[in-house]
Image (cartoon, rainbow, N blue to C red; front, top):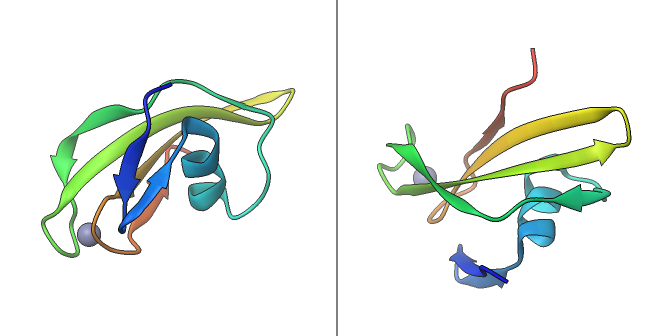
Length: 74
Ligand SMILES: [Zn+2]
């Protein structure tokens, strides 16, 4: 398990994906460091690939310091 600290809370890949998605997810891959800084606060950004449903795979990014998050959805 590659847990990380996001906004002062320890997250697992799945709980990080659920933070980004705002809903439950089926599965999530390991958390990785995203190759960018947060556009809002300049903080470190982590990235996680996850499946919100059986037919969808999304890569989400989340700032470790503030509320900023995004996904690769169109
Ligand atoms: Zn931020």
